[in-house]
Structures are given as structure tokens and as C-alpha cells.
Image (cartoon, rainbow, N blue to C red; front, side, top):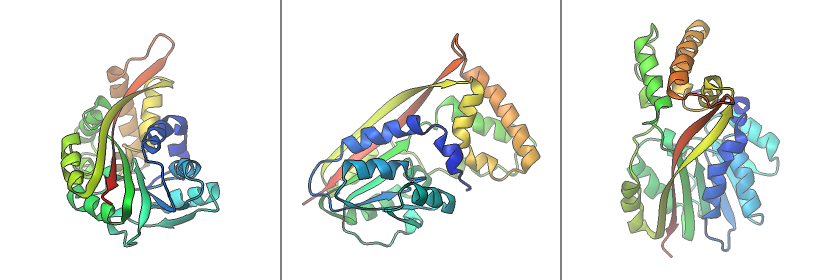
Length: 258
């Protein structure tokens, strides 16, 4: 998939709220080495660095454009283009942060133990993932994708994100490896000025990428026009034109056994 740091950053304040909440739950301690995996343009890395200013921090992302933006933002941090599923660095790390990244990585039953194995004893794996596949915005992506002249091109678009599990599944998977597992879910309500167009612009930086990337310019314009019309019906604007976008997110922090 192609990723645009500029598009992603248009709602940075809103996107930073969950990572603020996640980082706040990482236990304080002797944090010498930390990694931000799926770091995007470096906004989450910047917050991790502020929380643990004495740590040696690195970041990685599969998008070269995102890593370029992250390096410009934080030139003193070691960033690399890399795939989370193939990450070979054995660690040990005191903190591994994955903010809005693991939903794109398959096979969490294999991935999470592998990440926990890279932690030092007492180290923390801190993860936040969107939990919104059941929301109208995502259901409408599938509907518009299946109904238009682009249907054949988009036949596999809904498989781009990994299988979603409930909080109990993550707790059961992580508990045997952990001294403590904290799992929670939060629904953020983001006020977006600009009505349905603002909701569509939000998802153009993230969830819509698997639906837009396979299309040519004309198809993309047609898809977005039809999707925007559908979103307007699902997310009616308030009196002042603002749309309140509900956005559920799932979190967990697992501390490796000492």
C-alpha cells in the first residue's frame, strides 16, 4: 500500500490522543532501549522519546515515505524501512511500542509471542489498534467497493487488515508470557469540521488505502464521490456542520515476566 505522511498528519492531534493514553500506561523504570514499530511519520516516536528521554530509541515502518518524514522530524533517532512481521532484531528492548500498526500485520498468534521474546525481563509491549471494522465508515467501504465498476479490482481489499480479535483473546494469548497484562477499549469521538468530506479525508490517510490504491485516477474519483455520499447519510452533521466521528480503539500493555 502507498502511504502519505502529509495526508496522515492532517489529523495528527486526534491521532495522537490514543498514543498519549497508551504511553501513559507503560510502567516507569530503567528504560535503556525502546522501539517504535510501525512508527509512521514519527509522531508516536516523538511522544515515546518525550516519555523516556534517556532511552536509545529506534523506529521502523514499511513505508519509505513515512520513514523519510520521521527522519526529518527526529534526525537524532535511528529509523529504518522494515517489515514488522520479518523484524529480525532479537533485542532486548525495554519497551516495544506499536501504535495503530499491528492491524496490518497477520497472524497475531505468532507475532505477539515473537515480540514478547524481544523484551528484556520486565519490559513492556504496548499496542493500540483501531477496532472499527464494524463501524459504518468501514462497512460502507465494502459496500461501495462491491457495488461499483471497480468491484473486480477491489475483490481483496477487505483482507488487507489482519483478523480482529476481542480483548479476551489478547489477554489469553499474552498472559502466559507476562507478569501483567492490561487490556482496554476506548471509543473516541472526534469532532470534524467539514461534514462528510472531513470523515472521508480522515480515512484517506488510513483505512481507505486498500480501496483506493488499486484504482486509477478516474475510478478513485468515482469511488470517493459515491463513498462520500454514503458517509453523509451515515454520519449526519450537527447544527454547526461538525461531524462527531466515533472511533473505537483497542489497547494492551503486556509486561514480560522477570
